[in-house]
Length: 320
Image (cartoon, rainbow, N blue to C red; front, side):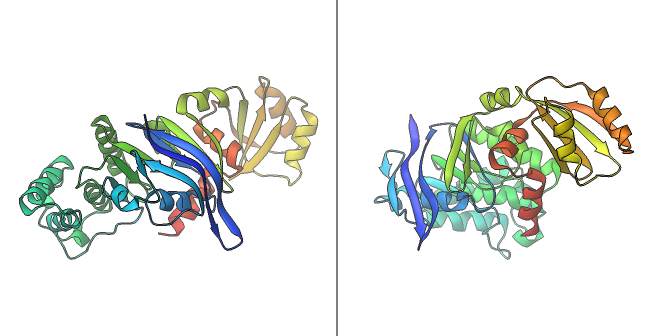
């Protein structure tokens, strides 16, 4: 069953078309990843899905409701967790949750019970009386997620769940997301973090330049990527003409891309490391490490968008 279904959905700002008549659906009970570079139309699409922006055209159905005409009803059955916390610094964890519950019209006894349940479920019950500003980044992220599901939504829009937190907190949040999904919550997961997409998502949609480029399962995307062979070399130095020289010297090579003292060489055919080692030696370039790379979901993203994820993460984190 399609719990979200968009057809020819578009959004324009004056003469600029941010989203260009996209079609996609989300199955009930799945974790749907939504990936794309900055400026791709990702945020605009999410804003239309959650009622923060009105579409310029197309149709949108969410949980059987018209996502444009019945947006107020839709907002009662969805939860939204922004990439930056929207909770109050001076309120305690418990007070923040109770306040959020009141916004959804929950009765006092019900919101008190639900708040305490979530504090316990998210391992925050011993911090419920501390002000939010005293929480660690990981604890803040968990409480923000708890606030987003206080009313037990059918669909959770969870933006960048592990941005800017430590490894252990990120692991705990991934576990929380998996448990929420196992309990029946459909999760819409826009992210720049390929680790989250690969570990959590059932299917992934790529949006580039306001258009949906592809939607597929994680498995299918990785199988497709692994039809390509990649060699990666860590070099002491680069020559500006190195990329084109490699492609000319080795007919089987389809591309050679440089980034952070590495060069990645791609080919539809199997590659042997030794001829490349000899090539670099002839150029007086020292190779510190060389290895065959097993293509991953990150390689799919780079091929689809033309953007390195490392740069995308730096841009995202630089805004925090």
